[in-house]
Image (cartoon, rainbow, N blue to C red; front, side):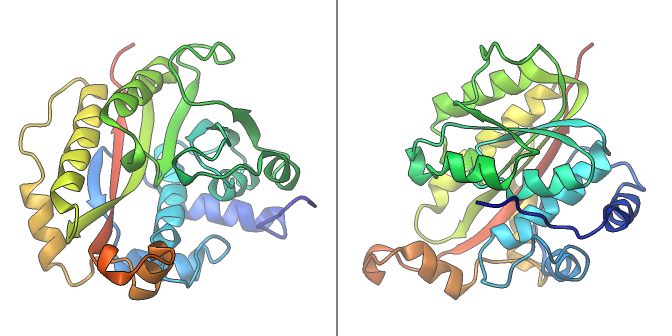
Length: 265
């Protein structure tokens, strides 16, 4: 597979970096909006698609969040990225990017390690689960660790292990940046609420505090904000994967977004 490129010249990369790294971001929990999606179609069409899937708003959000949190040439690690679309784009913006993924098909993940290594030669692909005892990385050696639609698929035990690894390899004041699917209304909404609360608690602990207020305010905004970006019916049909509709009925799915900065020295 020939190398894949997103940007046709260095000036475009410099323009993107200058535009989105002007203001430093703060710790926050937010959600994807239609405004952000439309602006991404205008500004980052290389990684913003039109097929109604949540990744079309999540991928550009992750890039913009990282540019604001840790501008290039920062050292980044992506957890479980599969096809390195975000990581590959970030390398063209001047980042040093490592992607850790087992590429073994677990959790319906990809297996195309060789193809991705060929298509994205600038991304350092590590064929492994993200564990705190990975000896190939020095402790506290990454400026930011991020994921796109990964954490919600982990069991509570695996999620806790993942955050132990983030704590092991993220520099003090480094950014932990994640976006993940969340069922706001419909089947499994109570389960997804517990998962989201767990993820946000881990982010809070990374900063040295405990999440006290839960998600009640955020849930109210999600339900009442006209700008909330939902998974489209077309995206839902793709997710259904041929299952009978009664087994996989529509649910309102949004993307939650969280940025935290590791405390400590």
